Image 1: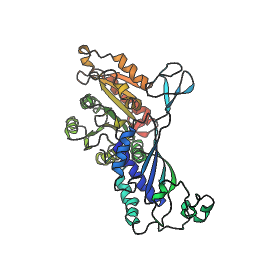
Image 2: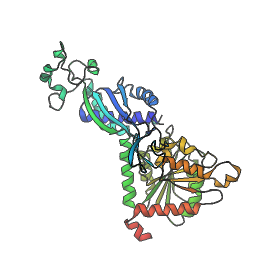
Image 3: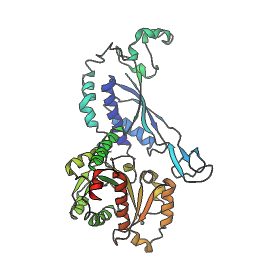
Image 4: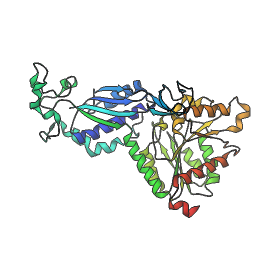
Length: 113
Length: 302
């Protein structure tokens, strides 16, 4: 996708947060990246190391949490697990699904010093 | 790599972090004792200071703190829960506000390269711009060719070259709006960089994403690039004049798009013959009325 761009965005947020919360070094970044976010986590890790070089987050550990992808099935009226956007409902086979989680692309927490 | 993307890191640099980082070497944590840093509560440490390390004053995890600078506070946790694209979304919200204030309908046209996006837009403008003031924001990695083609129709256009970037972002569109200074009640077409992947994630403040799929591309494209078809409200099947020469099955393509997005609308068009352009224009008009219901520009014009 655009993992480098996402890493630039993360760095921007870290810098802004450093001003707000008075820290000068980021030790660990924990991201929440849903399976439907379109983000390739390997590419994100690669981009992270490259983009953070020479910054306040150089050498920081990158933890990626992957929440499950779920959708609301209208015919079944319940939440079901999916793995891809085009998956049918595992219960009834319908495609009348509305994705309810799995699109997350968020910085959850930072460990800083 | 998209160093320009969605985040305006430049601003952040100027405003705070760089300055602070710059002085960090000399005056690390000169804010000591202002009481808001949990890690400064040294004397609370002893009850849980790991055996034999009471002098370390570790408060939040011992792993990363091992690398801390002597005299500086230990690592601490900051719960952020911030969207990675929050900067872009902020710019997009500002654009959206401009569109709302001025009664403008903005559409974000997305497709793979070569789907006939620009040709379709030119044909659309030839008709639609006769009844309504239109503007075009063109996104391409290089060249101003597309903006030139649009300007030939008499419609004001601005070209954004993203360089190595693979998508337009909210910040770029905001600058383009400053240059275009669009009239109230007008319609803005944003032709994104030809790419079915990245533009899906970057909100520009538009009312709708419109995905253009040409029938030379294969019915399974919505399944191959689900994010874009999930984000789009309308799919235009372009180049349908070529259907007699192809094995492309229109209903399969639409079914595939609806597997991804049950609410997506689909229209068949041909920029070359003009087939379906009227339907597309009536969709634009309907979208405009839905978007601007209650806005004075509608009462004045309609």
